[in-house]
Image (cartoon, rainbow, N blue to C red):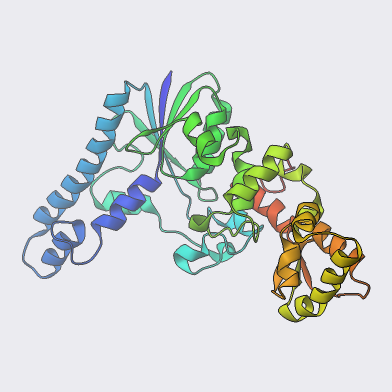
Length: 334
């Protein structure tokens, strides 16, 4: 069977646009006219219905271009859907509402769809919809994929977390304007799509307020995951970061220069052996070093530096659990 799974976030975004203030012809425009007694309730309902119907027709047009579907299923976010992930990172998606995830109660989008005179659980005849108040839409999508491995599934979503599903040969992805292919994702991250969750864990996701790993961008994440099979095979020392102040750096600068002179090492050579951090310390600049780099520095400098450090391993492990689908509280690393 050919199945279309639609991320209910599509309707969230469409209705946000429809209810923006001061936009001629949107839902807010017609509601304002109604509140000002310029139009009656019938004309208001007619326009709300028309605008929502246009959004649904757009979905139908996309699906028609792709091909016929035996089932169309919409998955909505539950109003408490963020709370499970909030146990691992309380600021998950806090950038969107200002409320930390453990206390977040979302808007029930089905009520807004009903306001437009549509049944949110049967928007079109034979279309079905699901919501679990404790889960997000991508969790429901993930569970459906997991339970229906013989069906050919097309996901309709703009959520980058859906990229991880492209490791399944029976799953394709469409972002409402174009097909997102496995090759597209692999070209973007420079890694097999199977490593997408690990890559995103390190890089972070600003849209979900996940910071990732400090000092690590897409290229560094790619290099690490090209060398190691997964996030959990990378040495933990890489994710323990020591903060070298400019004062410590200046006090240490001459000792590094003396070490080079005593061992007849050029600046180019020590960069090759130890890394780019060497020159920054010689220049008296503040910087961050991972534990392996810091230990190398401590072997050269005779006195104890006592620099403060942060261990990001637990944070990254928790963010991995948040990103990996389906989300399972207390899930083992896989």
